[in-house]
Image 1 (cartoon, helix red, strand yellow):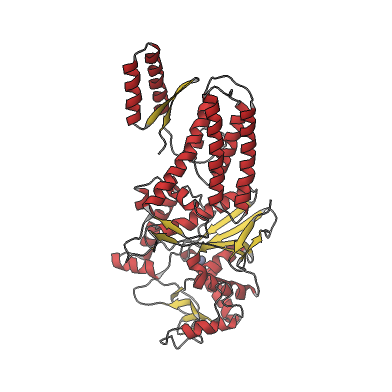
Image 2: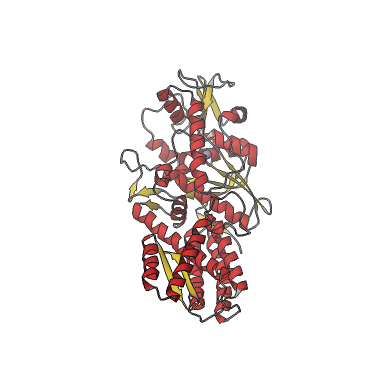
Length: 489
Ligand SMILES: [Zn+2]
């Protein structure tokens, strides 16, 4: 099956053809570490994590680079406000970034280059842009001359004439065009600075991503990602810098941008008081619920964040877990074994789910549809489970193993059901410790209740059922015996 992706540059879905067969190189714009990550930061990184997982599922060797903008006005302002140096702020919030992104089960990029670690590459790129006539130095600052780059505006669809007309009147007179942007800024008092051919200073925002992607991925790599708020000016300027530097294009083959996040249908902003930090959300909701919530909407669509939406995501995730519980119970039960029409139907459903899941993801990474495929498979598992529990079908070990493998593999592409997959041989990597004592204790309690029932001690049997009910567990009686289950929310 071929993967098709929506390319923001051409504004259409295109078949994905990698530069090098079997390999994918991707660059994702990272955060400016001056504060804890907010919900708007979580979306792109969950999105790109799933994109990478899916590409790896399709057997591509993915090389994933994501930067930290560790030299920036916001960091400098935060440092000055606290009376510390810029690197104290950057280090603190880089740690904070990893803390929450690890909780969200986002796999780490292969490399996280920083601006402060790439001054030589940045100044070398600026020098060449000046030498080639694309940039000019004035009073220790260096500007990119947008008029020199014929394709300026091709990503955002803006024309220079329109931009010029819309520019404010008080533009810097040293610039030849109002849209010219800074590649290098001369040092100001109270700011960190680095030496350069134009004197002490620091880079402008956009040049870092051109310099670092060129260093690690070369020119014309496969995917460049980020939030849609980065299309202009950041990515537009990256294209202008990189294509001028390399003497031609394309800089990137496929540009992918995720949509905005709104909070209770409003644009998120500090002034509206609806600015949510990921760590605060994780104090109220498990990280997997937030991850599930983000993936429940296609990455290009707007995503509305609200308590109701998160609660709904929690219920959706719980339905996926309930099917896992049923599978595990069937795998371990001692009732009669053997294939049946029902187990054949289950096998067919698992194969169909794999195909449907891939088809959804091949269509521009449609995680919303992929999740509904997984829910469909959960339903089939529950149908089979009910048939077995009603004594209408024996347990087919092979069908259970096969459907379990499919279910876990698909969940892993979405980075979900990590705890449930523990103990299954296909799971690798770090995982939360799971308490195995509680299930064993619950088994024991259900066993005692069965004994009470056998002795017609209804009072004890009912008391056990009622007390477990209060604790969130239901006991299911069937011709095949009794079992406990976590009550579905
Ligand atoms: Zn960038």
